Image (cartoon, rainbow, N blue to C red; front, side, top):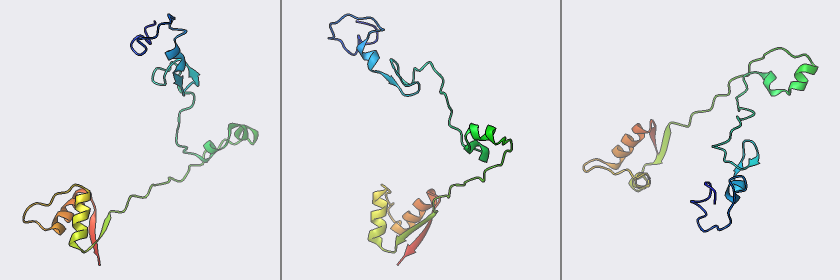
Length: 133
């Protein structure tokens, strides 16, 4: 038994070294594409770090850049993600409002209408309530 598998494979009766450990040889590292260790314990640094391109020339392969002697740096237009709509459209019906609130585990207080509770909840979510008929 080796120190790697003595806790996991307690009844494994074949003596072996850490280099020949069956548990260790089953571990796969997707970073360096080898067996023998996990991704968290990989000794190799990642070969290519993911970066978001800032210039058009970063989208071209290096062979094209050298072949056509491209040395410019044309900035890419920033692609902004659209914010989710800050509008909550709901039917103007007490049952629908009650179902919406109960689906989100929002309890209404005594003496407060469901519409007012919904508007308070929407305010916490930075949304505006629009009642649809």
